[in-house]
Image 1 (cartoon, protein in one colour):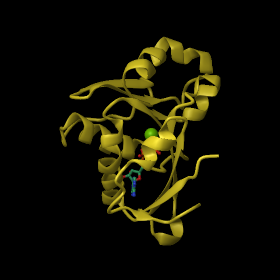
Image 2: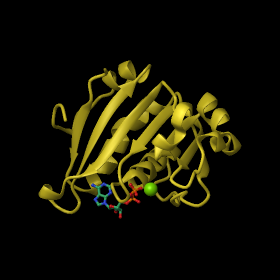
Image 3: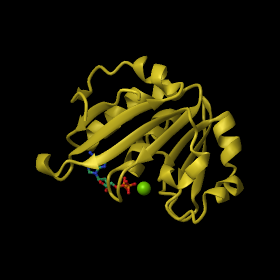
Length: 167
Ligand SMILES: Nc1ncnc2c1ncn2[C@@H]1O[C@H](COP(=O)(O)OP(=O)(O)O)[C@@H](O)[C@H]1O
Ligand SMILES: [Mg+2]
């Protein structure tokens, strides 16, 4: 099993810092699976990543809860932001251009467990969780590199992040 990395995020500014750290690793495309309960901060982290990757800090990033997918253009190529909460069957992702997205771009996907067998083997998994004991804004992000992301994650410059070792 790949070794997970735990990052403490005391507030939303820390979540934005995490996005800035991760963005260079996504320049060549890749899948980021954003797991965690409702309100954990999946969309907040996706929004921060999209704003870094598009280079537009004011980019409108609605939650794709109802549209299921929202596309963006970035200097590094196309980016797709999926929210699969309302997906009733894993096979339905095909209709959302899932395969095209994974083959050629940057993919941020909330509720990745809905993908079932379509979950890509190469992915950066980020599990977000509330850390109520540390305050209402506190979160913990557990990062796991699967497949090719094992090496990619190890290659990121994590300076400035509050690392908390293993979960
Ligand atoms: N450290 C943090 N990281 C991310 N979101 C935070 C943080 N602290 C507070 N929040 C707030 O928590 C909420 C997270 O909502 P959202 O990102 O939509 O969650 P999800 O997509 O996981 O359901 C937002 O209102 C956001 O402003
Ligand atoms: Mg969300």
